[in-house]
Length: 74
Image (cartoon, rainbow, N blue to C red; front, side, top):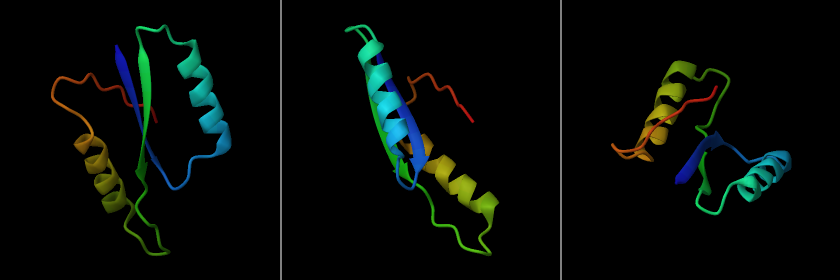
């Protein structure tokens, strides 16, 4: 089984990298874990957050294939 963890981020904090590495080690050999970091949209004082969220969602969906099972965490 292959698990792809998709994340929208400006820069992944060290504690996230450490947690990812720890869980990747704990998985059985038959299961691989891949971290895919998608750059966050730039936000400005008067940004339309709904449009930003839609664009980031589109970026996430571009990383998926029809046969993938998707679980969204918020």
